[in-house]
Length: 129
Image (cartoon, rainbow, N blue to C red; front, side):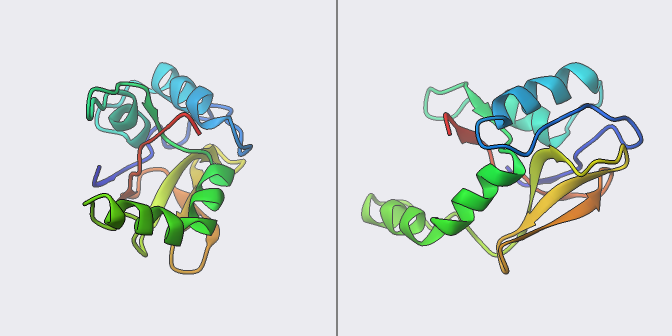
C-alpha cells in the first residue's frame, strides 16, 4: 500500500499489540483520527480482489508474518505472484505506549521499534489473521 504516516501524532487511541487485535485497532484508529491518508485508513478503505475486510496488523501479528515470510513468499511465487514481504519498516496498528509513537516492525531484523506517528513507513494490509 506504499508509505504513509500512522497519524494522530500526540493523540492516544488506546490500541493493543496482541494477536487478533489488528482489526479492532484499525477500527479504533479510523474512528479516533480524522486525518486522511493514514496507514489504518488505507487498509480499512482497501478493496482488493473483491475483498474489503483488510486491516493494519498489530505488532504481534507482524511478528508472525515475519516468522513465516519465507513460506508466504514461496507460496506467492508458486501461485504466480511476486514476493511481497520485503526488508522494510512496516507500521503496526499498535501504539508504543505514548501518544506520539507507534510500533513499526523492521523486516530486516525482526524487531519492532517505536517510531513517531507523523513519520512515513510502509503499510501492509492483511485479512482475517
